[in-house]
Image 1 (cartoon, rainbow, N blue to C red):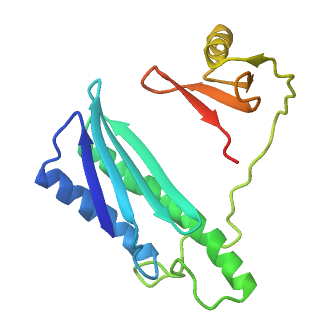
Image 2 (image 1 turned 120 degrees about the vertical axis):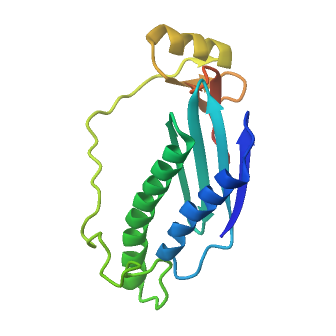
Image 3 (image 1 turned 120 degrees about the horizontal axis):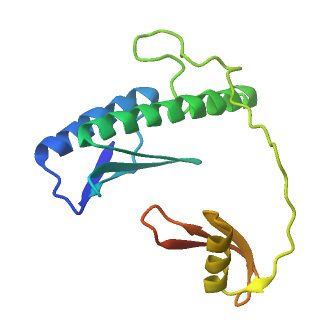
Length: 186
């Protein structure tokens, strides 16, 4: 894998860069052939918290994980563990679909690095339980009014009909205290 490691508000030392590459290279054992896409890694320190964000674009899936702790090396370890869990979950689903369609080549390996069977059983699929459904009538408003409405009700996001685009949009509060806007692409 190729690594694109950058720092925000911090300098990435060679030792830190080597540690990130060493830890992320553990993920290669889950693939038949190592991905040719670049792994994007962003290291930052915000309010004394060490944050690592890793994005791995693959065919038909985007693996992304973020971790924060008081120590950058601990954050790196935690983000690799999180990515491994994501890969195991995806590999079970992908390999099952490929076996059902009769494809001979799987994207992920069937066995783990020690030669044993995968730790995740084929039927070990996570279930998603929908516990509530809401329906709303959207009042057309601009983005600033939507942010005010969101803050008034004390939520982290607000769905509204954008008066300018006539489409449904979402405003949300970011971790840095600023706001974001989600718009649908056609």
